[in-house]
Length: 408
Image (cartoon, rainbow, N blue to C red; front, side):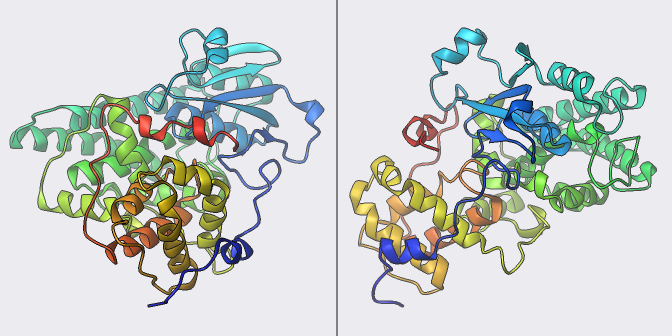
């Protein structure tokens, strides 16, 4: 065990340089995306959530990124995280996200937005109005409903749990049939073997990603094991840098879904409890969660370091330890970048785990960066004590209010 942790100056010298938010890979921090075009060509402004978590925003976000349409981004708070900005409710009284301005015209509701974008810039694969894509959209809603019944119905007895599980699996098998019949990677009927998914796939991505996370955490169910064609489809998405820039992780989804869904209910079986512990401690679920792996030169731990350094003063201000988080945070970062454990200050475990539990993907950093950071925080906290903070709130997530961090 190392005697001392690295200084902030030493850590800063090791961090990755900030990414190019405008012309670099898809990322949650951009306020402008150009794809090599002139800013004068921009016709689109996307209004999405600060947390880069809203599933309907993700659908539009992916469409713009895959089509490489230059656009501006303005970020808005989802109500479960904090108060909605007044400038946005003056524009959209309902506060609904996403919203989008196209040539100065305001549009709300994600499917209406996608149809308008399609008319302006051409379809992503087959048209949303093509009959086979209309059928895919219906299937996605059927899968969504089966998931909601299983995940969000309180008090299911053993028979009802099994019935809800069977109903979900039946619809999931129909999704697999579509993937298999296409003979390629994607469901989109225009080009199932193309390099990128079409809109018929994009409409499925946000909630299938959330199903994969939530059913593991609350039911002990591995979507990727039970449905290998869906696993293959997800793995193909994870090979795409564009998708990975929007991808969240199991920890973020498991704890952000309950306030959005009106509750998520545990099955309390042995496998489910094992998955809860593994996810909550920051270990992640390996290939059940994500099958792509960063290459040796990408150093996701150094991206995590860069993001922590960017917000370190606010992180201390918001933490129960306050400025006393300084040494424990440096201890965890030292372990993350060097592999050398450093004992944190006595009594710091709760504050370290408080930070571990509030890393949000992709808002704060990419999936692997978050995984390495959570693992380092948990390993460092364990050197102090096994004490854990209170469970994260279920009805709202005001502990994740973005306002103190809005220099990003």
